[in-house]
Length: 504
Image (cartoon, rainbow, N blue to C red; front, side, top):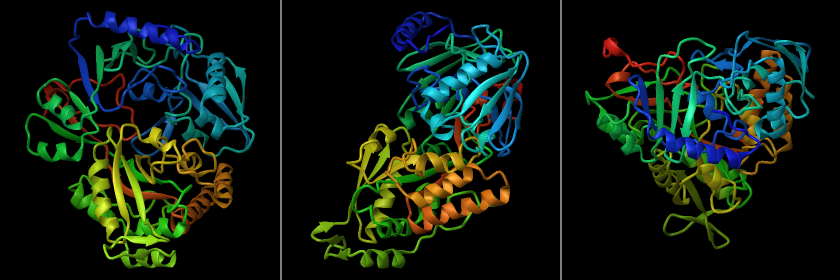
């Protein structure tokens, strides 16, 4: 299938046609059926390219691993030439699904397309230039040092690999159809990486978490992604399914804080908010131990991690008193006749956010906050507006899926970062983040990351870190051996039913 990414209306029409034709195809024997809350809205490799590596129809230049490292994937090697230049050398024999070889010319084309149109790439690599230096090699020159480039190339939101001429990818599966209900994939018989074990994959978009787990219990699906905690509780001991857990805890629930308006435009109120949240209660009691209690922004095992998250209600109350918020007879604080009122947005594709928000509502009331809980269909879309919300819950880790701490900082907390949804504008923090771009030495990187945590968490409390989550999947009998990916690489050429080994 060839889709011209420069002609989206033609692409949509073609997909609709494919969907109609695909409905008549027989079901392949070695077929995986998946249910997930997140819809693939288009095959645009720039705006929606992150789905390609997740669902196996595309790949990346570098691969994040289950060991917390990155390694070459479609690249054979990546080498630094001074502080502002890198040589990217491709593997031999990589082909797009169009049949075209992924060579240096094709790599230059796709990298320039991302540099021109991808906000995440533009933000991280503004002013970068790409030049062909050999049949399989390009030179990437950056305007400033970019010490985290290996991790950027392993980040699904950055350089999805696609053929600019045809819009096709390099993965083991080809897209056969896409509509509002499902994505249908078929094995690419010409896959450059060898034999693909599955004949095809059907990914259905099912927002309701209970419906997803019930689909696996009834045999209508093989894997249910993002199972809500309520469903996991009911599945304990159910022989019809198994709960599979990823190797690493890479999911983190945070609250983006709207610092553009009162009351969260005051750092004292933001710090009080953080101190009033009991993360241990949320993880162990509200979420029944399916979540973990964070001690800081980053996992404790990392050398730059700082244990700076705590629950201390008296300290929260002192900060609110200092900021002029006084308790009324009903326990709610007010200042100048206005209550200390905030709205916390949960979002329906992640159903656990609702009970967590409700529990936070009760915790924050003890400090004098009046909290309204709202549920929105898309968390980012709701937070694009400066009004209507104060705390927007979102599963956004402090590490990218390429295990990079720098890109999330730059995207979520730097002034005008593409995911700076709360309106943070802090020149001092910007200076620290900019310094990280040229911190090639680990000791200097670690020092700057600790400084960023001091400013962003201890001094300003720009985000509310809530709980950590281990990715889990509910699996049916044929996929009892499936291991969920810590880094969102759900499918590859080796994915297959467990066969005779099921349950062993």
